[in-house]
Image (cartoon, rainbow, N blue to C red; front, side, top):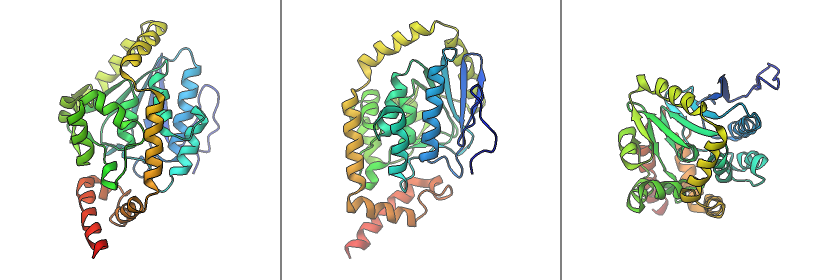
Length: 290
């Protein structure tokens, strides 16, 4: 259900995000039960949040966190792809979360992901779109599991991971469809740093406020120059988005998604050990061929 409180210009109310402001820093806690799936409601709220923050010249830094200790964003809701794409179009004009996430990368806002719990699929692609990523050593897990369904990561994963990790490690990460802990993610370049969970919040808060005290115009110029070197063109994000959209309609992908859902995919208990669930899809293929 939607909140019954009435939003105001200064204090908007979101269904899936709790927002708190400290001076020029905006903290956004994702809370979309039962497990923070990226569905149309969360995409709608992300679009609204980004629009409002960009329109407020007093906001310089946006920090994303999760209210769920087990899940940051696990992946998209595979049963509502068309709906969440339509929500993304309200920001970029195109029905693609790849372009929505790229918009965040090019925004004047400095974005930081404070990660605890599981970050997989489009969740990984969302934090990759943020300017910086810091994760709890004990609890953060990362995965780009789309190839387990025969799909290309469609929201920027290919573009970011190859640039951050290099060809071989990016192929390992994507083709294995496995979970990578925070220490290995740091070593591979997936995140800036892995920190003890007890220290993570204070570190990110201190960094956000330090960044926010410097001139916003200079930060935007620095981001623009860095993006000119390291951020793939919109056409590459658009192509991956199209490939995902085409692939997800393929009968083999649909069969694997159906089998995964039957085994508990998109339920929080089953996805605590998603690599094993995805490994079981090999049994599904063998059975379908018998």
